[in-house]
Image 1 (tube, rainbow, N blue to C red):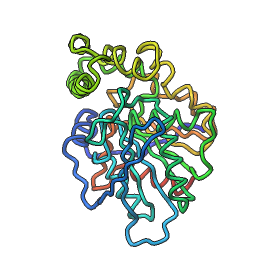
Image 2 (cartoon, rainbow, N blue to C red):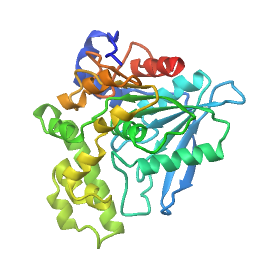
Image 3 (cartoon, rainbow, N blue to C red):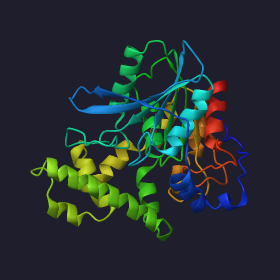
Length: 322
């Protein structure tokens, strides 16, 4: 579809991409979302935790939104709860997926999660459709790494369940190596350092559980996201190296084969995204794929003057029209 004209125009200070990113990530609070945790066992005997919240004042709910978080996130992040709250208020139950190792408890295996681990998402979707057959209308929404995971899932050759009616992806690094290069820029130094800190902590936990598979010496040498992906992410998940992981898991290549209504919202001032993370040509050539590029918003920002953020309004509107 043609590129969607964006009408997002936040208060003046939120026009700054870094302020928008930091405020939404560190200072936003979302109250009134009460989650119930469900643990499911995967086919390889590992586990994933799902956090459910439910439609307010509704019975016999048949609509569900499945929400996917970003790198080193979890289902308690404000952007997850903000989406759940909007949809809960409008007759949807919500389930937020915590990736392996992201729910507050280390997972059982050496592997964890990646930007392309659609096999885990498929198992979660199969569980939902099998155990909760009342959900005949499912919407999916992914943020950042979770948005990449979602777009890849939708565009892979394996058929998407008929119950999935629409999808929304926000702030997506759909060309992973391009985004990685962007993260190395000086303006992203603090974000980059934060992610490396979190990821190295995870590596130390993996060493404690699997000392024969990764050494302290190797972890000490991994001082960049690329080196961490080269050392652990790629090897633990069946890729040759970091570049092979980026090449095979970047969602941009899967966009042409998406066949359900899908909206991507990537802000032009998102400092995490390189030029190749804006799939304009792919949007123009796929009638099912809608692409909106607001001038403002930062990375998973989109403050809109109230408790409901712009990406949440757009997600619900798109889900309603799809």
